[in-house]
Length: 171
Length: 425
Image (cartoon, rainbow over all chains, first blue to last red; front, top):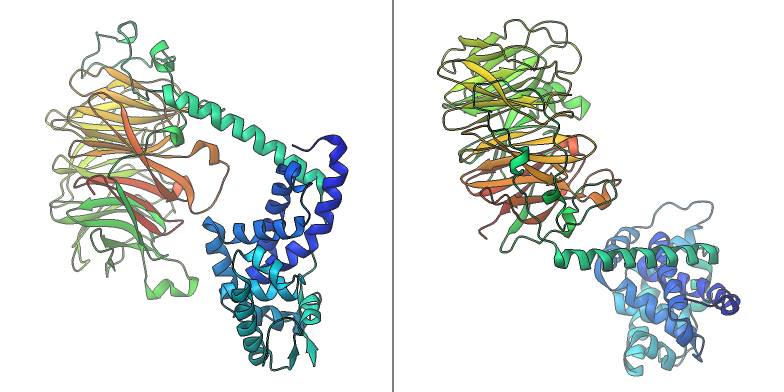
């Protein structure tokens, strides 16, 4: 699929994209294992469509959109629903997962799917409202509304004062 | 104040290392698989999956019921290899067969204590081994000394409030208004056949099976049919019991029958009792219930059979060697009409319908519950596979196929489920 000469470029891009795609999907799915599977599948798509991906200005947006679409399709959607339902109860903290991290993941999991996706691409992936709208396939107004609702809910769930100085009005 | 971006960054799990080699490997494997699937699709388009009669050169017209025949190894015939899709292990690719139209599959959940497969159906009541009993509750397992009934219409399960005289029941069968169980103690004592009242579980009678001594893994079979109870453990006489009082009606020596390691099975035709079974035992034996005479009417050579069924003048059995075959026998003249290789584990027939239970050969390595399985329906006249329906099945030792009332039932004691396959839905 990818010519040998292009392989290094594709590898470099995947290496760059992988942490952000994986992180976003881990929050969205509530399961690092499922996120790893989805990220792998996303990276496969990058290689498969390298000719077009290599010509993109923002392959990160494309990869995120592919990842979210995969998570919302077919059997994976049901797997995501199950994983999210399980993580809503905060598990005991382990050495690699401090209590704060688990509490945050559990709180994000309690958001509705669209709010979850919006908050993740806006505040984990640091995308602008316009870019987030492209990734999520909705209008910018929808992104703002979803993010606004999500932040308000997270404030309540985490019982901390969250600052989210973005384009959305959080009052 | 906590910045949401920082909070999420801190909370994100560590990403895995990116492995380009693994990615390339996956792409190559998928590409090969896709090529294979395309080839499979092309073959499927041309394939007509049929069970064919053995040609005239393979038919031994001297065979008649009641005449013992020597084992015959039947090699695949040219007609067997007419377009069909085969897997690397030589079996016919069940998953390439057409799906049964208008067939509904719904699954009823069973309790975990229905833990071993042997079933008998009587009306809408399916009898199965295992029950929930306080005496064994601490183990978390089912009690092996009692049986349960399952209403196949509603899925309601009722443990029969009764225990056998021996610790373990290995077989259950039903008929003539009774439930009959075969039990043993694994201590060298004989098998016992016990008649239970299907409502109260009360023991009506219990008798030892003469000449038996059970140690190790018992494979004996008890079946009700042709108005009587029939017992066989292979290599020994077939014993006929009266269902009324447990009296031994006959002890029938079976010619050419070997000591069994595999399963034994009975089937009942209009005027015949059929028995097959055992490692190295593919001999199909016909017993005339009137004269009590037994004869081998077909022997498909090396291998073993695990399942036998009869309906509408045809007898069907599975043959396991390196392949699996479904063998069709004409009950009238004993002629063998052989199938192509078909990954069958069980075969059952009734009310003009013949079904086989198989598995998806491409997923054969997959263990545990919900392994992809199929039930397929066969046109008994032409032998053509009409189509298949997918059913979730676990380990093959823990599944059983029953055909009754125009439906097929697949019980799975690994997945604890009963799949009801309704071809008329």
